[in-house]
Image 1 (cartoon, one colour):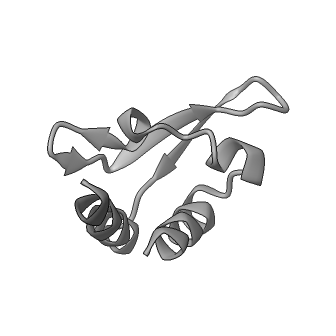
Image 2: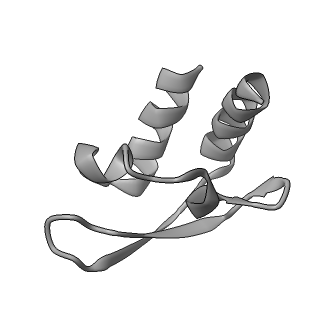
Length: 69
């Protein structure tokens, strides 16, 4: 489940691997819901990148997070 969620997130966000693994739960979760959009500062450029989390990605992230909690 974790691998699927991270793979889906990588496809949607188009982030580099180093930026992807540094994403914190607070970056993608607001309260009990997964955000529709998120912003991450890229390590290489230092610039913010905003990306949308599609319904499929939110579903796979939610199923993974529910399992680990």
